[in-house]
Length: 216
Image (cartoon, rainbow, N blue to C red; front, side, top):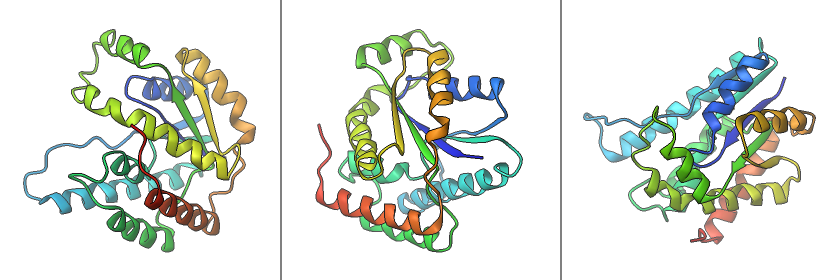
């Protein structure tokens, strides 16, 4: 029973794809963490709070794997690694702080990497069209987050360079096509999410982030 993660830009169709997969298969989807104002914590405490929510998502995924054919994480529990890198760590946790947190969790096996990634992509023009045609979500930070689309793709394609087939990139033509593509890719999700693999991949990512600037 694989555990996969679906990643991609705002309005690309991640959540809708997860919902459609849930309707068609024995799937449990874990939604992404939505940041909300927290008045009684300072900036560092807020950042750690949201990192701990990612750990909780991972723990929930392990529970649901026991009873479902497929568990999907809507967005990556390790998202802060590439997200903060995309903004050159301005107004967010630095790489050293992220490394310290995640390494501790990995060593305690409180978090790990999925069996495979699905990266959904499309053009900026199409993303803007979909945003305009979706009255159910405001997407207030849509323009601000457009700048992370290229760094996100660069990050996951680099991971796929190390472990070919671990990241499956699809042009998100439609929700229906996304479901077909993911279903067809399912046999490829064989990368074990065990402890040694997680540490090896994590070390590779940290080294790469330290030595690489995000693309503009």
